[in-house]
Every structure is written in C-alpha cells, then in structure tokens.
Image (cartoon, rainbow, N blue to C red):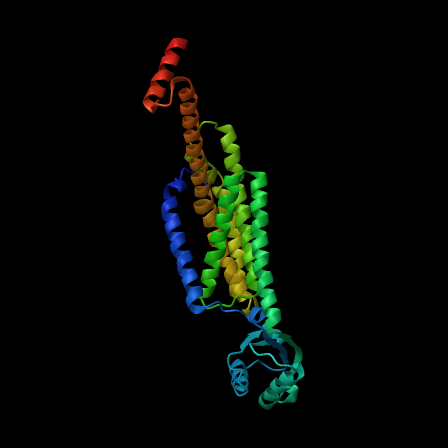
Length: 337
C-alpha cells in the first residue's frame, strides 16, 4: 500500500518556516498557561467524586440546580459508562473532613429532586490537596523520565545529534499539546498526563523510523550531500508515515467524538499529539540533525585548518597566512606529480 511513489519533496527547504510556525504556537500556548494559570483537575487540585446511578433518564440541568443550592454549582456532571446504564459522575473541587457528611448533603439534595428510590449513590471518593500535589509532581517526573530515557536510547542506537533532534521534537510536541489544552480551557489531570506519555511514545516511534532510514542511506550513499540524504530518507518513509498517522488519527478521533466526557480531555490531547508528532518527525527532528551535522563539519574543518597552521608554523615560523598554506600545498602536489 504505497500511496507515495518516488516523491522528491524538499522538506528541509521549509525548515525555517516550520521553526517559525512552531515557535509561535509554543509561545501562544505558554502565554495562555501564564495568563490563565494551569487549570488542574481534581486529580491534581484535590476534590471529591460521587458516582450516582439513576432509575430513570438523567436530568442534568435539574441535578446542577440542586447542587447550586449547596454551593456546588461549578461541579462537573458527566455520564459514567454507557448512557443506557444511567450512571453519572459528579466531580467537585470541594473536600470535607467527613466523606459521610458530604455524601449525606448530596443525598438529601437528590432525594428532594428525584425521591429516595430514584437514585443510588454507589461511590464517594475524595482526593486531598496534598495528595493532588504529590500526583502532580509524580506526573511531571513521569514525563521527564520518559524523555530522558528516550534521549539515552536514541544516543545509544544512533548518535548524539540524532538524540538531540529527537528530544527537541518531543519537547515541541508536549509544549504544543499542553498549550492547546490551556487554550481550550481544559483541565490538566492524570488522563492528560497519560495522553502526553502516549504522545511521547508515538512521536519517537515515527522519528526513529526516519532516523533508521537516514542512517541506512548515509552508509549506502557515502559522499552525497547530507541535505539530499535527509530529504530522500523522509520521502522514502512518507508512505509509512501517512499510513501510521491516518490509522492512529482515525482511532483517536473516534475516541474524541464517541468516547464520552470521561475521556474527552485524554482523546483531545491525543488528537493534537498525533498531528504535531507526525509534523515534528519531519520538520523538527530532521532539521535539527542537519543543523548539528553542519556545526560538527564546520568545527572539524576549523580544527583541521588550525592544526595545519600549527604544523607549518612549527617548521617555517609563526607568520604563515592561509594563502601561503594553500600555495605550499599546491607546490607539494606539483612535486609529487
């Protein structure tokens, strides 16, 4: 299923525009987080979750009106599981020293609205602020350790320039996804952290495929222009990239549309992550490999010229110019002939 045959797209020719666009997206996302402040879910900020099963069709506006009477108007009310089960999850950023007391308050309100036989409270769970803070720190460290592990893996399997490109691409994907979550007023929660870790794994998988082809082409086409080798490698893996992205994107879009409110933030993060992860493998990771490669080549040339100057200076004196070195090389080549 090769959708693209013998393409010759100059991907590396657009790297400056790609960097500019990505920089703007990251800047807007960071500005949104700073201005709005991170919006933490109950997992990270603390709060209480109440699971309720109703006997009849769920009336969400009626439930919200009842919760407003006890100061819980900002609670999140969502279906839990299939709608046919008539189960609802009420999430509130409020904790109490007594779960029983909070449960009784909610039970009293629901009894007034639906009668005592119209519902059943199945679960009441509370996450304290301290626990939420610990979970927030652990989630952050999970992302950091994942990226560090990938850095070491890419360094071991390829070379340092490849690992730097891969890590910068992962940071790019993570920052843009977090910015999108902030811009859409979604909450940072444990499912979102799980989504970010999934994005990291997906993005590096696509990047490694491109890197593997680059390494293979460098060996097969020694002496060829490095930019051409990178472009050729990206074009050769374009069909595979398209198939992987399309099938994965189809799945996460279905999750986003039909998955329900419980995993909506998770699936939204995946939708954004799949898009930027594919984009970064081509337009972020590969250009950074080129930049570092050119820097290494330039440094090697400067080192060689400096060594040559030092070697000649040791025999002819310190005042030897580059033009004299070139003239001496030509004379040596002529004498050999």
